[in-house]
Length: 115
Image (tube, rainbow, N blue to C red; front, side, top):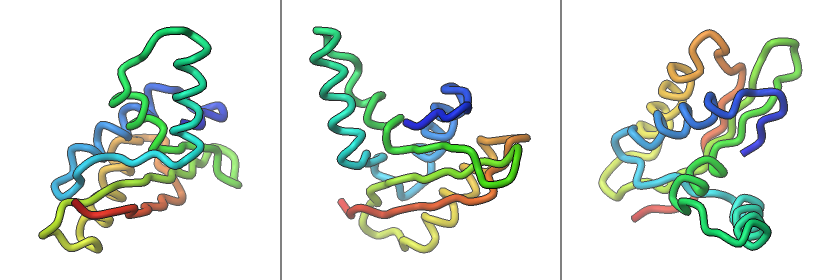
């Protein structure tokens, strides 16, 4: 999860909204997110909720190029039987709705697999 001046609760709210979209099996973090959560677990000596940390690291929120704008990148795994184009459109809509007044200028959805 990149917070780059963005409140962590906004990232968590977006992650939950994406997870609730029909056709989304789960959020899939990239390699950096997996490594980051592994290093954090070793550093603290305790294991956090792995499902929550994976979901947060699958959503990257950062500042846009223009002042006051956001960019959002989401990685998801879809359920078979759902059209990827329909689910990604619904994910984009869910991200924009969850962002509220801080509506992102760019939402990138990456489908990393089907289950």
